[in-house]
Amino acid sequence: VARLAVEMPAVVSVIFCVLPRAETPLTYMGAYTLYSYVLHLSTNVHTMRASLLAWLGVPVVEGRVAHVAILLLHIPYCLVVMVFLTSSYWRAMWAWAISPQWPALLFGQHADT
Image 1 (cartoon, helix red, strand yellow):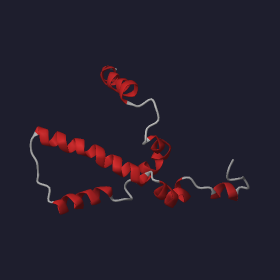
Image 2 (cartoon, helix red, strand yellow):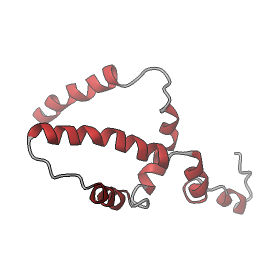
Image 3 (cartoon, one colour):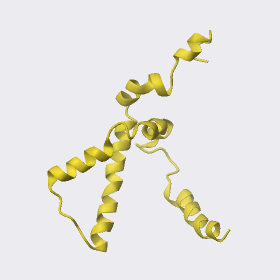
């Protein structure tokens, strides 16, 4: 109960103060988050990130400020991955598995109902 009382004000403040109330350029992704959730490991994101860091030769950092900077750099990285996984091309490639229309045709229902 105490943990809930401590954590809930942060969640409520994010919902009411940080989340946008109007449509944004990223609003379309909300309807397609299942694609990014199911397929994020299939893109080998972590392997690509590790190989990218090895290729760039990024130095090992120490210190609180450096770690905070690295954590903040994850925000644009995650946005790019999310935009990629919810793009129309990616959805068209995986729609047969995530939102299939063929089961309705097998049972004699129209695909649009």
